[in-house]
Image 1 (tube, each protein chain N blue to C red):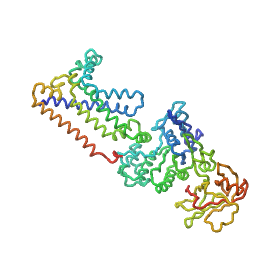
Image 2 (image 1 turned 180 degrees about the vertical axis):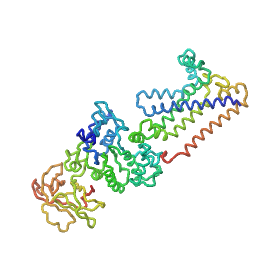
Image 3 (image 1 turned 90 degrees about the vertical axis):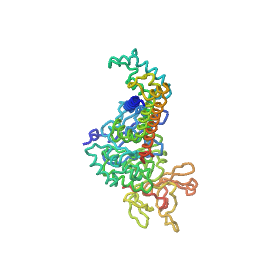
Image 4 (image 1 turned 30 degrees about the vertical axis):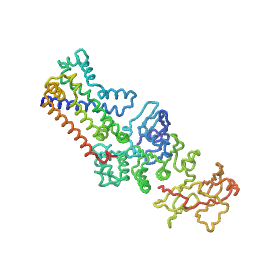
Length: 368
Length: 224
């Protein structure tokens, strides 16, 4: 069927570097297992080389070392002096600026890379799929930001590319549009069944859209893997700092009532404010400083705190004036407390304690 | 008025503009996008006619076209005529003399096309050549128009190089500016004034038309 199946390796295998003279080195080093739908998120702070890594895949930057192979074909190989031009990679590339051709209509933009026989039919098919009916004759300058985004996405998709590269596809939009479009984007890409690499510096976007996560810092890939796996077990403190939140676990919505969601996480149940438009699966994000540790776990009389979870301390790690407390609360949970408080309570590994967190401090990100 | 000289000047300017467009598109593309280290040398050569006295340029052209030069000999064996003081020689000289007036607006316009648009076209599978035709050229139309008009107007008004290379042969190398000079030398002020006024009017109209066109056709996307 597909060439990559014959060769037995992953669909995409990138292990390439770009050296900027007198500047940094940026690497693209990760794999995509299969040719079907999946979203691999390149995540990291701005300036970490995500865009350059994406441009290496597109062939817009040459690889100075290493190789990129997709579907059994070699796209770049510095040692063998192979550099396949972007034109010959058959990919879809969506830049942060969209780069719509300003002198061409929406229809002409969508059909730009298509041969004449199929062009009209494909454009007619794309316009309603993207919610752009009746806008085919407009120029890009006459569209709203959200409409421009959809035209740019549609143009990248029109040729049914073998790989889709999206550079911060939603960052130019306002917050409410971003929320709405993330869900639409993931559903659209799933329907079209195209493997996608997406660049973002937004944690919520990474969690909501990604299947796999590649964490980048200062041009290097620090860690890559399944999204839950990376958030669960950051390989080093730098990754944890970049991820920026101690606990990220997948949970299942049990009920939603009065703006309050009840979520099953591991063997525990927690309450959180309902942000709206949740599916049945969510990522539950909890910051370490929002977790308090108490000795007893009785119902707190006169307290506004909604979550009091019996937990066992699995590890204590000093970090300057703070102590990082790893807890098993039916799911792995991490708290940050002061050394003073830790000493007062005489916390030790193996102790049974109560993990306390406000419902408002639990952040939910839909992930269906 | 010397209608023969006017016709000759218009014909020379038209041919020079056409030749420079054909020559200028690839050269300006190269200047706009090449990353060669020695590009500055080519830029300097292209800009030379802006600062060189026309007599100096004309002098070297005369030497290069002469019967003892390789170019002159090759031309003579091919066409059986000599280049200096011929219309063809004048055309070659005009093309070189007006080079920067075509190349510089073109190169500036090409270079100002957003790099992202060019890369978007490549990623959609279009070759460099097709990308030039479909993206770079349409978005550079104002620069191309400017290059055409400036070249035409500049060729229409050239004097020094024509005098050096072409001389003053009615119907072959006698252009408007030479005709005016002749008339003034002969104290024939009335026809000189009429021809000069015509040249002034044509130049102004062409330039005004160009700027008006650029203004009127400015699309919303050219502002962003």
